[in-house]
Image 1 (cartoon, rainbow, N blue to C red):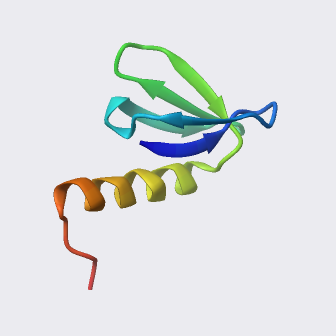
Image 2: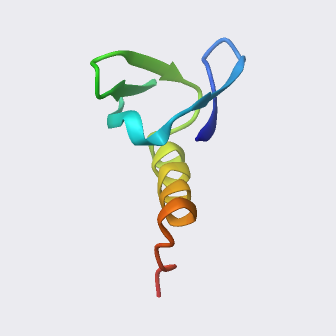
Length: 65
């Protein structure tokens, strides 16, 4: 799970494993595997970073370098 912020400022938690793709158009839109779209305040790079950190925690992936 990753902590994000809706565009209205409300925090929420999203299951990172449900993310299909992330776009910046210029707002950041996360599309989930079921087609639902979520508009968030974070940048696409931030969302990707949070998702990678989540994957490292849950799957014991090595740190880069």
